[in-house]
Length: 154
Image 1 (cartoon, rainbow, N blue to C red):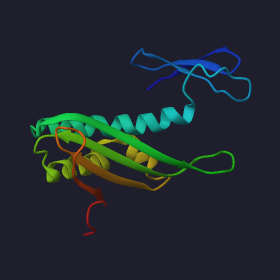
Image 2 (spheres, helix red, strand yellow):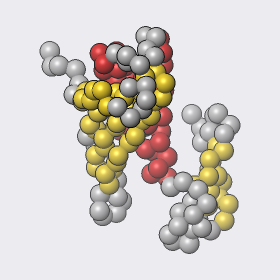
Image 3 (cartoon, rainbow, N blue to C red):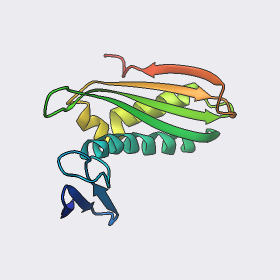
């Protein structure tokens, strides 16, 4: 993978990777003008996107009736510079009629243990808690919730 990051003045940058899509970064501090996302947001977005694509792909292959799907990353950061991530909760929010909890748990497991390179890499740097909520098709009635705690030790 190759990334090119071009300075656009003050604290603004535009980056492009192999996909060809341009992303803007900026800050509101240190002379920035708040015209783009922060670099650490991109790291959290990459983590969310990586596992989200895995989980929704697996759920679709399992023919689960998903009407809506969301992944939220709640990342904690150190108080002192360099203000690294110190922990995260990844929350999978699934809406649909009769979504199978065991299928969702298996999809989360496969993403965490096998497919998501962002999760595999970042989990070496800070702990992650993987939680899920399954809502009925109305999107308001919480049917089930739980946590994936990893594969049992052999």
